[in-house]
Length: 343
View 1 (cartoon, rainbow, N blue to C red):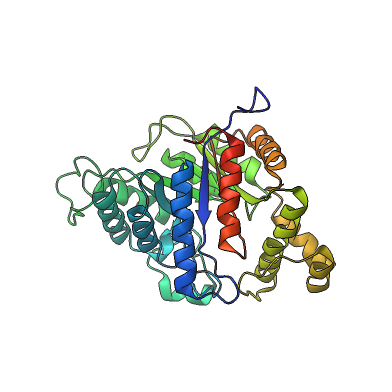
View 2 (cartoon, helix red, strand yellow):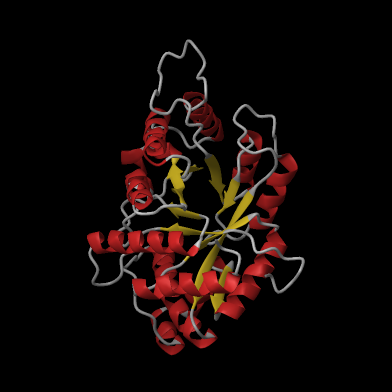
């Protein structure tokens, strides 16, 4: 039960970028993520989503649909999906066919989260680009996927996606700004806000989404606004140990900010961290990661409740980085026990 009667314990989900720790191979990183998916399924988490990143040497999340298929094959209950497929990198027909096929494999457990960012650097994006990132092109692509996966795709379509027909692919719009929220509202789709790494407009984006939501859109998937908020999670038996583990995330994000990405590093003391990251960079990383819950189970629950109250989120999606995959799974176990409403 919630410690505060006005704060429901909303469903919790997991976002996985398939991180590779120092000394770990890509194969081992993928295997560790599959163990995470199995643990989340066993513990009652709502969804397990994989991100899409390219030319990022410390992440193995480039082939999102393949990761989804593997994880769904190794789990029984949990919804598995993309957080997200970066639509400018893909032809809409191929997305419809891939996710239609996934639903044929695994039934109604598949989510298609869609974003407009390339998920990589500009040079790599040129090698991947298939559609424009402009809002109008994004809307056109979503409308096409909706038609191809409808119960009765309209007659006269010049191109069919038969494997997707009738699957009504469950879609979400991902975004970090008011512009992304406006797109989700216009399309009548659930909205997942990337506050875990872009927190500076997340409250305004959620407000805009709710105010502008159009349940009558041809692409509408929900009858009312539905939101999911991204949160950085670091949980351990004690606040002190969680703060130590948090240093791994700060080291990783420091690499993102400087463009010097490295494999996931082991935790270190605050003094060691400050010797590695200049003070200004450390402050910048902590600001970007401000939507976070770091601490013991009791501390994390209190912080997640605060985030739910401030955002009015319908769900939370958590991203957690640990040098040792066993620490990450232990954290999922601790939170499941403390949150108390997971299946």
